[in-house]
Image 1: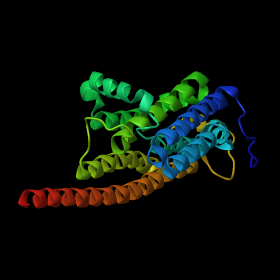
Image 2: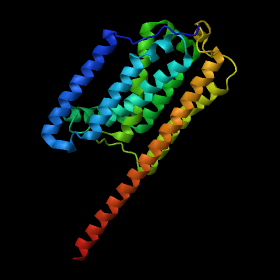
Image 3: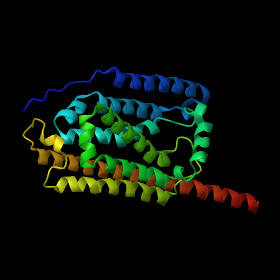
Image 4: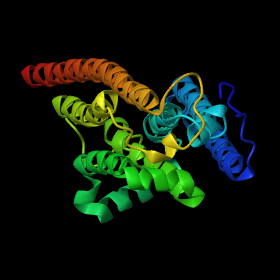
Length: 273
């Protein structure tokens, strides 16, 4: 079979939550602009929101969804990357303290209630743990055969992605903050940890997920070739995100260091006067 039967998924259970997200976000964005101008809701937040909405639609409503569910492990990998890594990052970049102002104190109370579970290490462990858990062959195959389990898998990926990126972005400043070098080590461990799974899938010679041995083959890809491509997609995406994030964090570290140096110089000048 060479022509996959796929199309856009116009399912209300998928589209309504996205529509609700868009409505609530635009309402808060408009209010934030009134309250604080561009400082509270600027072009960066608007662009990130638009990108987040596009990525979420691509993940759950575009042909990528049907390709992954019916034909290709590699397409399913693209979907999981969008849901568990790219979309959560963009959703958090679209936020600011002003946009979240009605819930700011609630976030702080939740952090205090969680205690050590609010530490960045917990977010890292949750992200890696859930992704590796869902890639256990029996559980992965079951999710593809049971719609409710598949929905749970996708929801858990997205939640884990939020937990991973929150300590680095922190739209609402929290008590647990990563240092400059700590941020680099944190994202390095996250991406290296997942790239290891991608490396295994790239070099594997046996099909790990029996579901994809039972579906029609398309585009001339055998099941094992499809699995190898999926692993390569995971490795490349993790590497690209790591490089970009390292660059952004390094620049942020330099800017913060320069700001701290200027503050210290002002204090010294004031003391000398």
